[in-house]
Structure formats: C-alpha cells, structure tokens
Image (cartoon, rainbow, N blue to C red; front, side, top):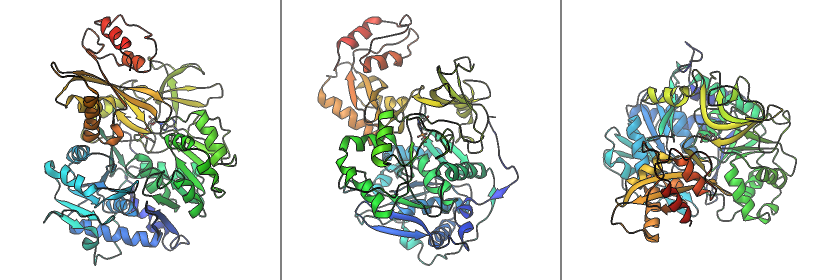
Length: 580
Ligand code: WTA
C-alpha cells in the first residue's frame, strides 16, 4: 500500500470477459440487455448481438486512430449504446471516462481537460420527464475550450436538430456503416487502466479515480455473483445511471462478466406517473431490483396506491446503495415492494472501492434494517478513533479498511500526491473512507455517513468546496460556505451561507440567481436547497471557516462544542437570530 497491484504479469481483455466468454455457450442468444426508453420503446439485445455492436465500434475507434491508453469521454443518456461504448473502449484498451448527462458543459469541459480526452461520444439528446435533454448542444459548449478533442461521435436518439461540426463530428450510424462485426481482442496487462471516474472530494475540483483491469473485474464479478445471487433465469435491474460507479460495476462489468440479463431504463421514475418502476417490474418480470434510498423515500411520499396497482410478484431480491437507508424506508421497501418475501441487501461501498465492501449475503446473513451488516470476503474494515485506535463495540468512529483489496482505486489521475494524502495519510498504511461508522455488539456495521467535507444529496456526492467555488465565481459574492442539513427526502439538503460584496443588495431574486448559477456551473444535482445571506462567516483566528458551527446553525440546533477558537462570536449570534 498505497500502490498495491494484483495478478502481476497476468493479461486479459475485459470486454472479452464480458462478451466473448459467453459465445458458443447456452448464453449466446440470451438477452444481455432489455432496454426501455422513457417514451416506452423496448429493445432486446442478446450477448451475440452485443458482441457484434462492440466489435464494430472497436473498429470505428481504431479507424479514428484511437490507441490503447487514449482517453474517451462518454456523455450519453442511459441507452444500450452507452454500454456498447464502454465495452468498445475496454476492447481496444482505451480508457473511458463517463460523465453523467446531468452535469453542466462546464463540468464536462473540466473532466475532458483533466484527462485530455481525444474523443467524445454523445447523443443528440436523451428523454427525461417527457422532454429532451440536449446533450449534443452541451458538448458543443464544453468543446469551446478543449484542445485535446479531435472527434465527436453522435448517436441519434431523440431526432432533435443538432449542429454537426465539419471535420469533427460524425454520426454513430454513419461511422459504423460497413465496420466488421468481428474484432480480435488484444490482451492487456492486469494493471492496464480501464477507466477514470470523476467524483467529488473534500477539497478542490473533482478527482479522477483510476481503476485498472483484472482486480477491478474480479471485485465486481465476484460480488455480483454472491451479493445478487445471479442466476441465468434472473432479470436484474439496477436503476443507477452509468455515469456513476454503481452503473459501471453493477450494470456493466460485474453483471456482463456473469452473463446476466439486465434491464436498462432511460428516464425518470415518475414519468408519466409515479408508478413507472412498478409498471416496468411487472411488464418485464424483474427478479432483482437494486436502487437508492432516495428513490425509495420518494416512492413512499408519492403514496402506496401507485405500488398497490401492480403485482410485483416476480421480485425475489432487493438491494440498496448510495447512502444510509433509514429503518422506516427499509421497512417500507421490505413490506410494500418485497411483500416481506425478498431479502434486502444494503451494500456499502464507494467509487474508490470499485466493488461492494460491506453487505449481507441474501438468505445467509440475518438482516437488521439500516445496517450493511458484515464485510464481504477479504475486506477488513475497522472503526477507529482519531488516533487510529479501534473503538469499543457500540461507539462511533472513523471507518477504515486495513488491507488492500483487488478492486481498489490505484491512484487519482494525474495527481498521485493527492491520492496518497486523501486516502492514506489520515492513518499510516490504511485506507480512510471518509465515512463515520459504528459496530454493534454483534459486529454489524452501521454507516453514519460522510464525516469529511463531502455531502451526499439524493445519493450523489457533492464536494462543499466545489459548490463554494461555484458561488464565489458569481460577481456578487464575496465569500461562501456550503454545509449539509438532514433532509427527510434527499438524505442531506445543501445549505449555503453567502456574504455579498460591498454595495450588493440581498434579495430573493439574487438567491434564485445564485442557485441557478451553481446549477449552471456544476449541474442541476448541485443546485442549493437554501441560500442564506450573512454579514460574516464564523472563522477561526487563522481565517478558516468553521463549518461545524454553520452545520449546527443550518440544522437549527444549539451551538455545541468548543467555540473558543472563534475569532468573533457576534457573527454566530447574528446568524442565529436571523433564522429563515
Ligand atoms: C455512501 C456509491 C450507507 C457513503 C456506491 C460512501 C452508503 C459514499 C452506502 C460513496 C450504504 C454508499 N450505506 N452509506 N449502503 N452506500 N454510501 O462514491 O457515505 O457515489 O462514502 O459510491 O456513499 O458514494 P459513491
């Protein structure tokens, strides 16, 4: 540690392990993907067909001059071609970086520039709540300042008009016209980079988490096999977008390497009605459903009637990921969706861990609502105090992983110093997760949530530093601090304290403008829930903003703990008297 390696000297092709290995077996003509678009269009793609698609796209990449190790950015709706693009990258050893379609052009540009992508793959648009999300237009904006990109491959999905730039932009269907449907996969080193996925950290810009090939594939293949108990007869549905790690590991790599059949859905859970998911479970016969607590809480709020209209009798296993699941939501999921028949696997893991780390095994581990229960094979987590000493059972502390594991991140792209500092410096020689946790008397793990300056809003990681830098980039803002406050629906809500520049008038209109500004800079997922104007922010004498105090103010609670390091207590007093 921190630079552990696996299967040194071994070679493999990850796409071959997801596709070719099923050819010539009974899985060859089995559905790999059943896709439902938001408008209701359905397509089924078998393993053999998927293999053809991936081979053809691999040829397209090679004809464009893309080589092993080159980076390709994927900014697409949740359609099968997004999966095809990822696997075609893997096939030729190119490194993909998938950027969630909800991120702004600005955020896309930063990611492209950080990894110096040569090619961008996108679509004209994607369907979301009956409207077209104009992805190609966003790419055009992002590419105004991306010197490394020489081509853009554009999928026609919605048929909305787009501008194609001569010499740079190519339609997917034109590019692969005539490309052969067989492609000999080359083997790459076990530690060959597979993908970079950007995620929020506690400081600065998002960091590019780098995953490599053999160890990563092993981690997600083995965990998918045991945690989801995948059988050839299953129809597995993970509702995550491939823009997140859950989509990488538990839509694409972990499931395809197991030869599973999966459902992919393009759109919103409440379109045209809040029963869309349940309609789809019955329409296709979903047996395993893997989703996030935020979605479960939204369904609870929309009301049981939307669920009770459907049978849901095909389901046999439920999963939860992305944030702590509160026992109330767990019970609702168990009774209303699972009809008390389906185990729930509450899986704790991170972009950095690549695969599930703490989880029950269905039918094996006795469950406790709200607990991820026990570590997966080979994972050795501990809960420790600030000195790195293990705390007694029942006490809270910091969650660490004491041994390397095959699917762990290898570094942060282009910034190994930050990698070492971020994960391996809190306690010497062990991985620090950034999460707080406790172990109960039975040794079960209970994750409390992030204890660093990262928020988890609706299961999406947002760095307070990113939001703050977006706010201060607005011409009216002098200073800003972002904190989380518990929220029934979203898990955490984003509260921002803003000090305006001299002479700028505070107003509701400006609040709105600042919220939109952040959404414009980062993406709608980072739009602040509340903005509070303040004449000053609580700081230490050395000028550091005391977020702990702001958190307490945002939660409406009393200021507990030490305030002696505060430079000026009157700032806090005025913030408290000025409740919304
Ligand atoms: C949180 C998502 C409690 C946690 C796979 C972690 C969870 C962060 C759980 C990683 C869970 C994820 N119970 N908390 N089952 N799953 N988290 O990188 O705070 O998007 O550190 O990976 O989500 O988020 P990320």
